[in-house]
Image (cartoon, rainbow, N blue to C red; front, side, top):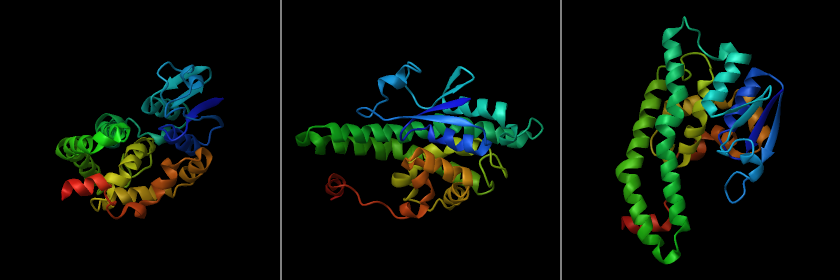
Length: 242
């Protein structure tokens, strides 16, 4: 029996999605965050305390890509291109790694910097905001848009990330694209990314997963038009542009 230890609003949502695609029996154990972090019960499963964690036949697996590869190898080889389909397999391997190695670090760094502003005493917050905005505009945002442009160009000639068939690379890519929705996907058309979002969010397995985990990763993932216009900047940002 597969057991997914699910930390709310985390990367493990993509694993629920894949399990639904595979149509294999599994159990979800849900954990609430404590002060924004994994609770002690979660860190007992893995000292890193990172989500997702899957236990299958007594073996514990961590890291999204490694978990997806294990599930596909054991339960659904059709969700990965065959060795004979070299071109599709190379696309699959690229995007399985691209998600967390290329795109997510820039988005996560921006998120951490924004958190640092919110944690700064109010009297110093404006100064810290200017410093953070400088880092984001001169480096992080540029790199994020560069990655999103690359993704959009790829999807212009591919229905899914590994070609014309849905594979495990699609759930793997969902989390960073979800994370990019508000601040980045609203700034440019990105018609191919948004087309892909609509296609995959209409899959029954994606919808079932969204209902089961009851968080916003997949629910908002399907709400593409919500981010069709740039968000209103916060007050500090308005002041800095004057």
